[in-house]
Image (cartoon, rainbow, N blue to C red; front, side, top):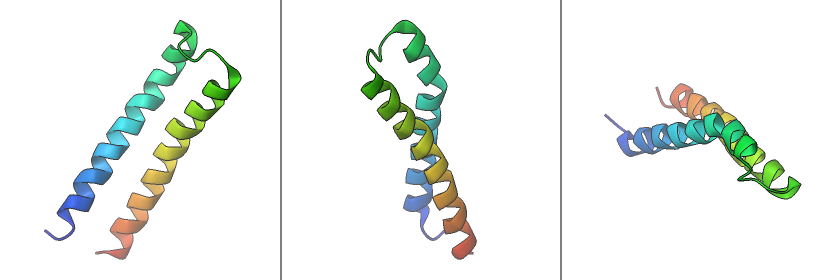
Length: 65
């Protein structure tokens, strides 16, 4: 299987970002993100990273068949 390492690292990144995206509302409620800068930056990092990584992986699979 070619590009096996790329597949594994992409799936690990997607799972970690998905975990952060699921825990984000919990972090807000518990007060771990105490100011607007943290709230906005963590939102962009979690959700933007997840969406961007899924789009990149989909294009990678499509282009390397």
